[in-house]
Image (cartoon, rainbow, N blue to C red):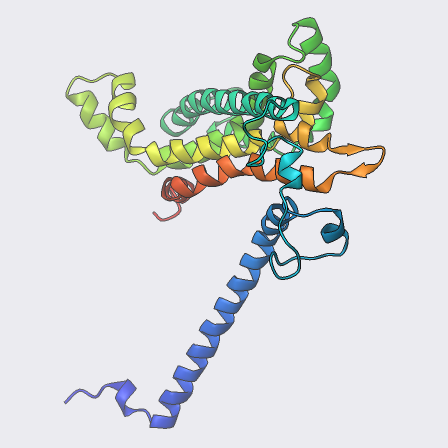
Length: 307
């Protein structure tokens, strides 16, 4: 007759085991809650600061309606408050112009990077390349190593090149430089995505008469859709928040939102409430897109993690 080892243990030992398990879970949840607080507090501080006035800000009041009464001063300075949204406002027009520049530059660069990076990643996972002593792993590492290069190293070359090509302060110039910025990340994500797709699916399609491009477009890309979405969203987030090249290569026409946020500092100090309102308006679209496409981002980033 078989005896269950768990029921054979004394009662106090089983209770002690359950107690240790409960304490362990409680510690894990406490650590997760603490880390969630650390990650979300800057966003909370930014949003609440956009509804403060100078007195509330410098007194360090944090809880609205308990420590201070929310005010639309920061949003009013941008022409985005309920009482000023219907009135002509130069700051609001400037904000919308910068918002449009950021949207066009980030979305255009991300789409271009996903298109080029997907082809490069597919080639690295399906074909064997030889350039001297370089092989596929060396080429992949070369792409990833570009993330280590500090942007300031490229400041002078880009200034000279863009001046010669008349790309300074243009949206096209920002799209090109942003594409180069996020291309290594796209290749890294899509290489893992394509590597998790069995090559036998493409071979079966080719046996049925499909070409390599046909198998890539009709079979591989639909399966790799979560990776494409994840790479695109991450690229948009990175380029949307990029400041160095936007401040370096633009002046008036193609300035983006990060440059406008940084311009809220003046000789009299930092206009914290306006900067917080501007930052909140800038991160809101990304937050909505991230929440709406969360499952695609998770699927894309975890592709190839489990074999």
